Amino acid sequence: MEDIIVTGATGFIGRRLIKDLLKVYEKDRILCLIRDKTDELEISGRKILEDLNVRTKIIDLVSGKGMEDLPEKPKIIFHLAASTESGDKDHRCNDKGTQNLLNAFSGLNKNTRFIFTSTTAIFSGRKDLEKPLTRYSSPYPSNEYGRTKLAAENILYEYSERTGMECIVFRLSTVWGEGTRKDGLFDKINKLVKNGSLIPGLDWKGRTGLINVNNVSAILVSGPDHRPEKNFSQYILSHESLTLAEISEVICRKNNVEYRKIKLPGMIWKAAEITAKRSADFERIIPGGLYNLFWRLNLIVNDSLHCKPDEFLENLRDLKIELNNFCDDY
Image (cartoon, rainbow, N blue to C red; front, side):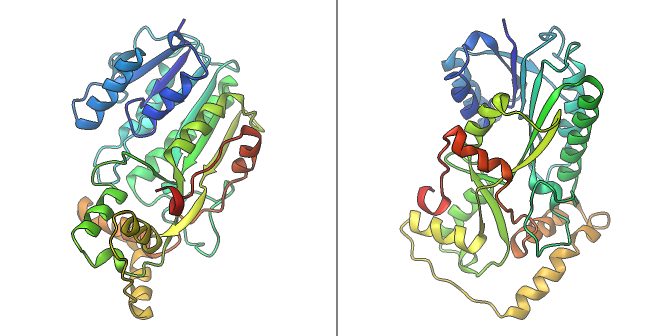
């Protein structure tokens, strides 16, 4: 009987999660809800699921298509499916998709554990940059990606309050590891390094929280055994915080390229920081693609996504999860 539901199983984190789940649960208990897409990531992810002989069902979270006849009362739901590319125009998969997923089940209650992967991008517009992010920080999204993920959290909170369903929200910092998204942060830095660009050598100031993809998967698998303080709990998953300059130095070493640090005058970084802080002011008046550049600039010139390791990571000693360090394990 299928009583474990997984969305986003073909993705960067999801394909690892399935393998880890199969170490704990019988495959007949798992049903993966997948997209009707044919992009490279989806195709390779489906191949993994096929090789593992895990059952799949094609759905569309935004329209609700294909979501009929799902198990009424699953024990565990891992909801990883999301629109994560900040430059995309349509992020309805995040909020409307979450609502449609809840609507597809008629028997969710206190006997169901719902595990949702959110993002620290919901804090990207915050002003109190002198403080690292913790689970108690107030959300301040500054783009549609962050807003829709925060809206999904609120949808889950209201549903949990109404039905008693236990929900754990893991707000992920930047996730790294083998097979990161093509044209994502790490892929772009790798290309710049290999092409001899000067950009990776700049002494970037902004710190960003990081956590390894395998660690994320292991933590998600532990979710059903973790007892939240309330029916609805939120945690930040971040193991360490590094600057883009520190990340670039590691990637240079990985590629056997000499890292040459370029120190810019402080006034240039100050001007960049002021501009980045005001990035949210431009969202309504400049094209989305250009605004996305401003938004990304905000994340690498200041500490808007600098995270203090969350209290949840203190439990990892009990869970016996060994965390990967970026500088050692990339």
